[in-house]
Length: 101
Image (cartoon, rainbow, N blue to C red):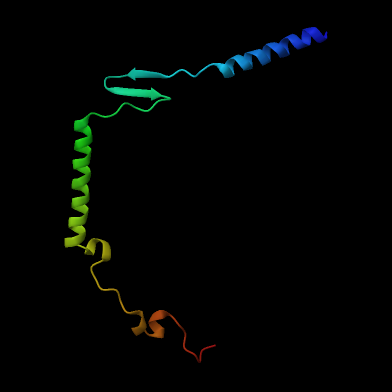
Protein backbone atom coordinates (compact mmCIF):
# COMPACT_ATOMS: atom_id res chain seq x y z
CA UNK A 1 0.00 0.00 0.00
CA UNK A 2 2.87 2.35 0.76
CA UNK A 3 4.34 1.84 -2.72
CA UNK A 4 1.03 2.58 -4.45
CA UNK A 5 0.57 5.81 -2.46
CA UNK A 6 4.16 7.01 -2.95
CA UNK A 7 4.05 6.56 -6.74
CA UNK A 8 1.52 9.38 -7.13
CA UNK A 9 3.43 11.65 -4.75
CA UNK A 10 6.75 10.98 -6.55
CA UNK A 11 5.13 11.67 -9.93
CA UNK A 12 3.83 14.99 -8.59
CA UNK A 13 7.25 15.97 -7.20
CA UNK A 14 9.08 15.09 -10.43
CA UNK A 15 6.52 17.01 -12.49
CA UNK A 16 7.02 20.10 -10.33
CA UNK A 17 10.82 19.78 -10.58
CA UNK A 18 10.67 19.49 -14.37
CA UNK A 19 8.38 22.51 -14.62
CA UNK A 20 10.65 24.68 -12.47
CA UNK A 21 13.80 23.86 -14.48
CA UNK A 22 12.26 24.72 -17.86
CA UNK A 23 13.08 28.16 -19.18
CA UNK A 24 10.15 30.43 -20.02
CA UNK A 25 9.64 30.96 -23.70
CA UNK A 26 10.42 34.39 -25.10
CA UNK A 27 8.29 35.22 -28.06
CA UNK A 28 6.96 38.11 -30.07
CA UNK A 29 3.51 37.66 -31.48
CA UNK A 30 2.42 39.83 -34.39
CA UNK A 31 -1.27 40.69 -34.37
CA UNK A 32 -3.03 42.93 -36.83
CA UNK A 33 -1.18 45.21 -39.22
CA UNK A 34 1.49 47.24 -37.40
CA UNK A 35 0.89 46.30 -33.78
CA UNK A 36 3.57 44.16 -32.13
CA UNK A 37 2.84 42.51 -28.79
CA UNK A 38 5.95 41.53 -26.83
CA UNK A 39 5.94 38.97 -24.07
CA UNK A 40 8.77 39.00 -21.51
CA UNK A 41 10.97 41.31 -23.52
CA UNK A 42 11.04 45.05 -24.13
CA UNK A 43 9.05 46.34 -27.09
CA UNK A 44 10.98 47.16 -30.24
CA UNK A 45 12.25 50.75 -30.47
CA UNK A 46 10.17 53.31 -32.34
CA UNK A 47 11.42 54.68 -35.65
CA UNK A 48 13.45 57.89 -35.50
CA UNK A 49 10.79 60.02 -37.22
CA UNK A 50 8.22 59.01 -34.57
CA UNK A 51 10.60 59.99 -31.74
CA UNK A 52 11.37 63.35 -33.40
CA UNK A 53 7.66 64.01 -33.96
CA UNK A 54 6.89 63.18 -30.31
CA UNK A 55 9.60 65.60 -29.11
CA UNK A 56 8.25 68.35 -31.39
CA UNK A 57 4.67 67.86 -30.20
CA UNK A 58 5.82 67.86 -26.56
CA UNK A 59 7.86 71.02 -27.11
CA UNK A 60 4.91 72.77 -28.76
CA UNK A 61 2.66 71.72 -25.86
CA UNK A 62 5.04 73.25 -23.24
CA UNK A 63 5.47 76.41 -25.34
CA UNK A 64 1.65 76.75 -25.48
CA UNK A 65 1.30 76.32 -21.71
CA UNK A 66 4.08 78.76 -20.78
CA UNK A 67 2.96 81.34 -23.39
CA UNK A 68 -0.56 81.40 -21.99
CA UNK A 69 0.65 81.43 -18.39
CA UNK A 70 2.82 84.46 -19.19
CA UNK A 71 0.24 86.40 -21.21
CA UNK A 72 -2.99 85.30 -19.48
CA UNK A 73 -2.22 84.34 -15.86
CA UNK A 74 -5.85 85.01 -14.90
CA UNK A 75 -6.71 81.50 -16.06
CA UNK A 76 -4.74 80.14 -13.11
CA UNK A 77 -4.66 83.00 -10.58
CA UNK A 78 -8.18 84.34 -11.12
CA UNK A 79 -9.37 87.66 -12.51
CA UNK A 80 -9.72 89.63 -9.27
CA UNK A 81 -7.30 90.51 -6.50
CA UNK A 82 -7.44 88.35 -3.40
CA UNK A 83 -9.27 90.21 -0.59
CA UNK A 84 -7.37 91.30 2.52
CA UNK A 85 -8.80 89.24 5.39
CA UNK A 86 -7.50 91.68 8.03
CA UNK A 87 -10.03 94.30 6.86
CA UNK A 88 -13.07 92.02 7.29
CA UNK A 89 -15.49 92.70 10.15
CA UNK A 90 -16.69 90.14 12.68
CA UNK A 91 -20.13 90.25 11.09
CA UNK A 92 -18.72 89.39 7.66
CA UNK A 93 -16.78 86.52 9.18
CA UNK A 94 -19.85 85.22 11.03
CA UNK A 95 -18.46 85.86 14.52
CA UNK A 96 -21.21 86.70 17.04
CA UNK A 97 -20.90 89.86 19.18
CA UNK A 98 -19.17 89.56 22.60
CA UNK A 99 -22.30 90.41 24.63
CA UNK A 100 -24.36 87.60 23.08
CA UNK A 101 -24.62 84.35 25.06
